Image: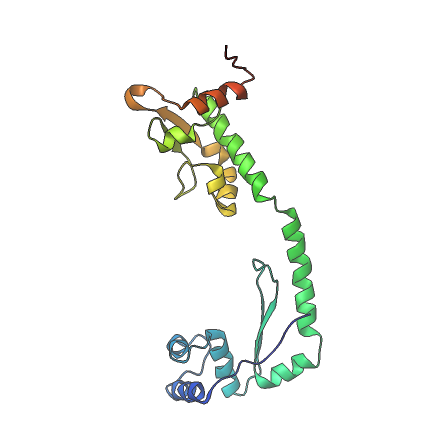
Length: 212
């Protein structure tokens, strides 16, 4: 289920750790841990476990990152604790527990394409609510031919095509739906749209243009 292996600590790293132990790095959360991590290039979690092992304490740290696609279990342990893990199904059981819950979480998430469509519809509706015709003219926005002031967007976000947002940003916009409002402005109060945008707006409203 999981791949396990002890981190190899070189002689030079051992000497550096010994130096920090002698300076007083003998408790979890010691301010010397970060300094030791920088000098040895070892993760702080390994140094913390080494500090406890130096005091005769056997320690196991298991971690599972729900955001990683590989869904692997990371293990940091003292030598004695590692031998215990090798003789039991502890890590496998830990992995199975969180993989089951993580799978349940992942299956309930909407695809990004669905979130993009929802935000697209939201923006278009907010645009229509203030007198806009059809869809938001993103090309005119880029060309500064029309200005749409968007209030209530999540902190740090500006109005742009929904497909340019990431998943978290799309989710935040949907959550803030009731707070979002638009105000249309432009040069001399007039909107200027491209021919493509005008045609798109007309077709979107169920109108047809016949060229003779």
